[in-house]
Length: 333
Image 1 (tube, rainbow, N blue to C red):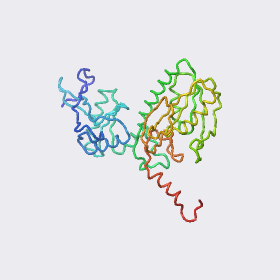
Image 2: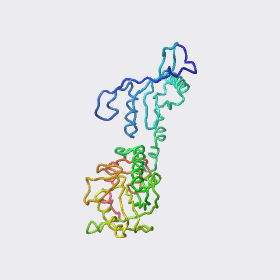
Image 3: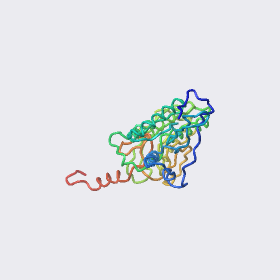
Image 4: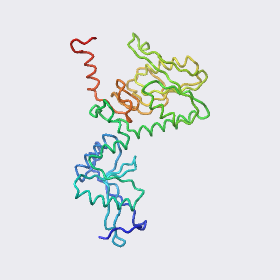
């Protein structure tokens, strides 16, 4: 077999699209494809868990020719479109690693713009870090505490950019007072503000919630805004809107100061929990009633720094609730 000459005519180096391996159209993505090896199925499940989009063996790259005829092709196992990255899986078995390394070198010589990696099982966590999931190693966070990832870093980035574009269009020619409700809004507000094109100032509200006789008595403003909002356009930024009771209280207090307008943007919305109708102009994502953490949202001040939004398994907070209800003998209550 002749080795590929370099340079090779461009028309000989066209990648060939492969036939789909799809065997069913329902269920999780990793259950729809016929994989050639169990390790590929395992890796697909790994990608699905972290909400990393993938396609299986989408194209083959010609890497050797006999005359004008293709003599050898290389078909990477996976393509990750959000990272423009091809992945070829392998094991530690040297008889397999050596020919794959040879093919990989040829591919990189012939297609220098193609981003491809040879991945061992031990490299999964390095891929996680590259994709932005390295924060799974933070102290006190155990992978088994997470039920599922609802919104990936790429989905967050894409949606926040879209919200900022719409806000910028709606406030074109006007300046804004952007008011963030602490603390869960921190990362969302920072990313959103960087993308807003209209002129604005940033201020913050901090709320205190406690058990009161009436719903409207269960929240108070602990830290008020410093910037005067009378006659100004106010954009109130929240991390999540649930019953609407807190938002209704905050809006009523801010309206007493006669702003020119006031609108609400929230990263997450749970309309099924709504008890009070509140006007939410801009919504990032609607989510189910699960307890979610990450991207600023916390449980007991933990998990805020996760780069995605995920479901916290009920056993995590149910154990804490049970401990509060049934303190050990001798503990103070």
